[in-house]
Image (cartoon, rainbow, N blue to C red):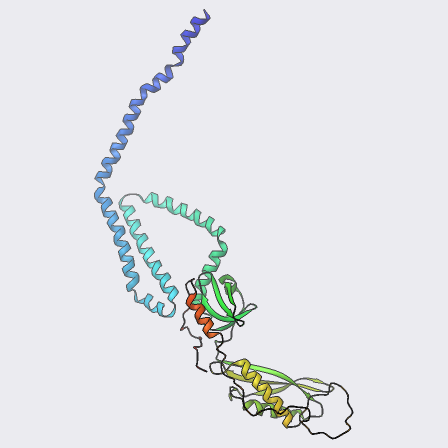
Length: 354
């Protein structure tokens, strides 16, 4: 009796499987009908598809044509070559996207555009957080190329770094330090740091200090020093050299002398060095001595300039120091990051022959 019950139960359990097998031909038939309908719809919309492809190709050609022929972009390229390329690419991309949107609208596929744009927004947000520093440096490079705070060859100080500008790439600002070293600063740091451009104004002031004894007329010492500086090649007559008393002490005073140079014709360091030498020489010739650092007893009469070497009358070289110019030019030629600076930007000091 148990075996008979089990045998009777088997056909009852296979009934759903038999029903599903019976429905398979109907399901395949529906699938084939849907595929057939899609193929018929595709054939019917073939002219629209061809027209949509033609619209996309036309928009690509029109974008390239418009970016090459726009006069506004041509004027921008003369002052900023990098922005010229960026704006031309933007114009081409906008026109091409407009053509794609028209083609998709013609094919009734605008819903696909919304889905793609939504996904692109999420992906862009994730990539923005992942590459925040890279994006910051790129945006800072674009802003620096627009503002042009320096030009190739300018002598600048950025934060605590000093050197001559080689190039501005999309990622970093390249400097040649005064020791001849290659220095790359992230554009984000350059944009946020205090920037001092020594080359933007051709005229630059220098100063130095010297000690004068209490037994000397300080008024006469200042006049003698100013007259000596006026005779130095490279010291400008306007603004004229000047002198003032920096501080006082029991044994004398500290005088500060100031002068101006034209950086396009003379080097600041060399001119300052020659001015210091000339002032000291004028003091010795006028009998103006520095304060005594130690007490001494004079037993014999000596000449005023005894103990000092006689200075030559031959002036020293004060021309512009061009030691780094060749190295900066070579570094600009091999720079592979795409220079965003205009070599003829305002404020750039072109090389002058010594």
